[in-house]
Image (cartoon, rainbow, N blue to C red):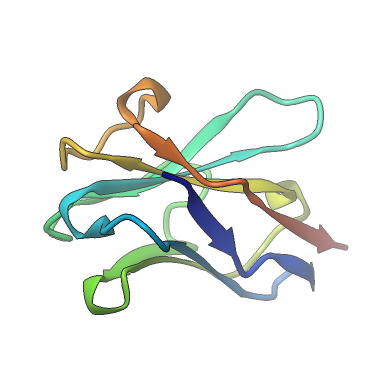
Length: 123
């Protein structure tokens, strides 16, 4: 099973992007979904997650108030709306699915991963 993360690109600081996480052979609806990012030379960073019900959403302090995670199970897609982007948001963004359904900040709780999408924010 592999997830597909998409929607990345080049944007100026202050701009917005919406990332999508989907899967062609796996139903995301019963899973919690987490978003992580990794900038060059930096550690893997958890940034957001949403429970399987959608009732629980969580954010890292670095993105709180700027990013919003949501899910549309009818489209088998989880979104990460990113607003007020900063240069320091530049990274490859990955999504992961936790079959337990429980939101987690720990990458080892996620069973499946996508290949990542590049987000570049210019000054």
